[in-house]
Length: 227
Ligand SMILES: [Zn+2]
Image (cartoon, rainbow, N blue to C red; front, top):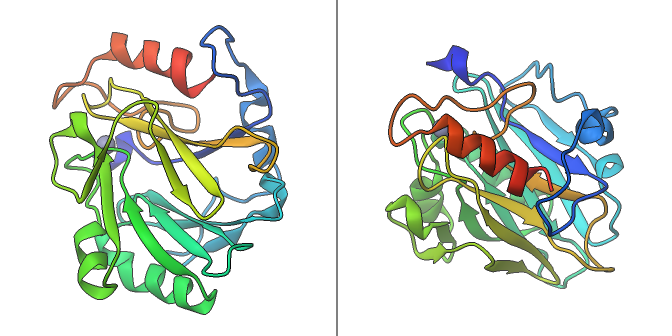
């Protein structure tokens, strides 16, 4: 199964807009040019990506778990006194690494959020909750998974003065969502979209099981993730 999902990505773009009218071409990944995400070399790899997004508030790290080929993302508002942070798609076997990084950076982890629930994505959310009291898990309502908080399209997840916007991107699974950084002068620019398996680098997640639909995924990618 791993061969179908070798890359989980962070998409950062300069022309995100709320209207699903723009078909986006190669510049999709231009802001990644200084970030070595296509060839991770270590399961402990952590890439500071200050060049990928310009905001004095945002602290951002991309993390990789090689056995499941999963990218996890750490975001925090470092301008806030408590430095509230969240993890997107944490993996069970790298929970200790993620928690150590949070501590080393002096952050307060408040949310562990998932883009979807799937057999190929073993979340570390439950483990994090046992190790870091107070952390709330978040997933889409349409995933029918368990969590402390459920989100729907249009919801905003705040951490300090920053937020992620929730967009529905079904097709890989019925409950897939993409989390997009906020729109506004004090939010990171260019905006970033955390697509989970809905959109990968040079590909998409598979659609041949668990409620997958290639037609729906095509629509999701073009109307939500790339706009
Ligand atoms: Zn998946």
